[in-house]
Length: 355
Ligand code: SF4
Image (cartoon, rainbow, N blue to C red; front, side, top):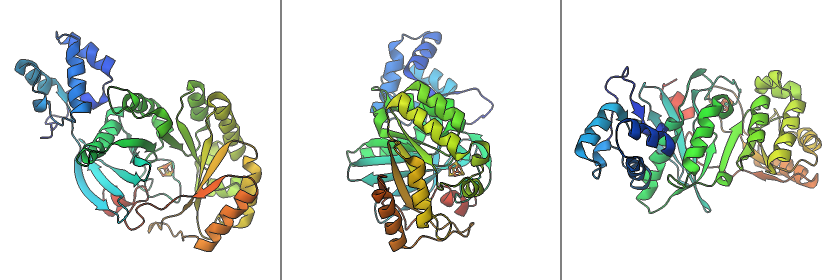
């Protein structure tokens, strides 16, 4: 049974939004012993409860009080698409009727979940459907946790688990910095899903001050940069963020990230036919990255009906990758997941008219 918010004006606590220490503090304020927080956490993260009613080892009177003052699972599945390769994309409706996409990607090394960090996005990248309706709002950490738990419950049926997370769905996670970091703290905790920080990737369009802030935190997460062009004029035309912080400033911040964390960076490069997929782009990209410890992920762009971008032919993709490799840059072509469904970020939401 799913708990629903009946009165949105009630300041109910979202249990998925609380770290163990927050919950301990709160149950103590409610006059309960501190260990009740661990009991609740156990129900949420180990027994995968979706309703406060499930928490049968709590005193009945406290359960009633909890139901008055808190909510647990509130997201509803609007629609789902299942790819032949096992990728599952779900459109989830939040308590305020806005929607976000979350994707499960089974790999031979484990199950990866791609979560959204915002409803919509204001970054305006021209190859992305998530930004078509602009930014609606930030998600809370709890709403990002709930996306993950949604798929974890699905995997429970197969005796499997979420083993890695990518913050690469709709939204710019570093624009919703505090919630994104709280989410990471929460799902990496032993009491929750225990997903190691090295198995968590944050993708950014290039918010330089936030990259530097993240570097200073010295977390062991992987930072993925959406680069998509080695040339400022082209990148600015594809990604407005480049007008605020250009490529040189971005690469400086990436070097700083490497210096502070010792974590190799990932650069995402969406190949768009006739736009950024010429060998001159590959050469300039290799010059730009130089000796920075990194990996380049080449992504054949998904066709976005709202934009008129074409896919790069397969032999051109191979030539681009070979050029980078020969110039000493470690580059791979991302195995396409969910190509037969609307797996590009924002497409399902757009198709459902939920922008
Ligand atoms: S690619 Fe990412 S940052 Fe750019 S518009 Fe899409 S969701 Fe936003």
